[in-house]
Length: 263
Image 1 (cartoon, rainbow, N blue to C red):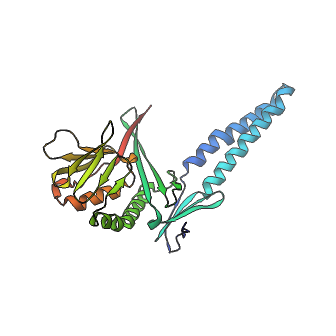
Image 2 (image 1 turned 90 degrees about the horizontal axis):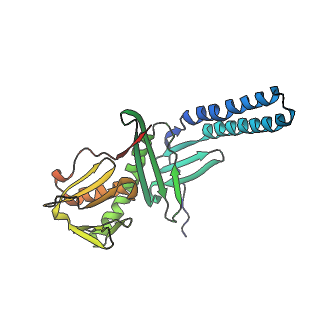
């Protein structure tokens, strides 16, 4: 098995962890643990004093450990790849060309369905050996980081994928979708595949976190699926955009974020 080389080019950006995890750790563990220690120390029940103080001290230590871990948690972007750092130092590193698969999922949160509560982006990268690497979602400017990873990973994989198509081979995107230079195939609900010639693709859109491929003359969507369920979804869209070659089929705005209501 070929040994993967870590990125070595110059650092272009550093994304440290946000303060949210540290604040929550202090409130949920340090403050609460200190209160339990105080309650045990001042309590009149001598039998419960030691267990309560031990529990409180454990909570304080756990909270401090989380704070230290969050202080060291960051994603370092280099010109040729990214590195993930944590409590134990560098946890993993991948070059753009070694990101064989990327899974992207964005969720827009709304409280009671009305009040926007931010967007959470989840990214998982798979190397050629099949090992999965998760990019932490609680880093500063995660939207910028996600866009950079998507652009670089897609750009690194596109030439190889396009060469496959030019050789008459198919490019698979999980089990749900396949593309060759003449058609796109989508998995049927009860098994098997249905096909749509690329000349009949009327529109390729992303709405509310779902990829929708519309075939000319059909009322319902030909195929697609949730953005998060399609590996290398940005590569899929770029290939289709290059193959369809009709402006009307390539909308400028694509909504990659699903919506989730809380509260």
